[in-house]
Amino acid sequence: MSDVAWFDFSDLCNKALGAADYLAIGRAFHTVFLANIPRLTMQERDQVRRFITLIDSLYECHTKVVCTAELDPIPLFYVSEEERNMSIADEIFAWDRTASRLMEMRSSGYIR
Image (cartoon, rainbow, N blue to C red):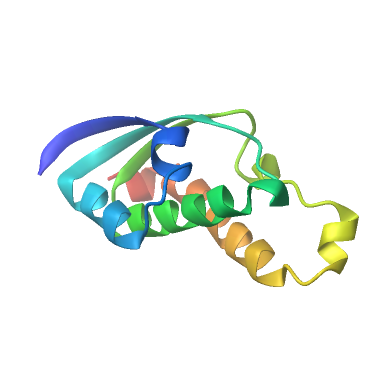
């Protein structure tokens, strides 16, 4: 296992990558720096899904993640009232899990 890796959000979430790619990163590095995470909306649904998969994969590998983002994890994904009334419950549920995992990944218990 190597030490650390640095990625820009666009390198990992704006390209057609999936769980196998993200798991390979998690297995290769004990710490991943992820820079420039933007505020996400349903207009960026593909990027939202990739980011969720990325965090799930790194969490599964118990990889330490250091992020720079426009906002804290919870408000990072914006869903309008109109979108909430549409059938996007899966994305909202998955995002809530991702935000929770990002908060846990900040804890001293996870970092150890």
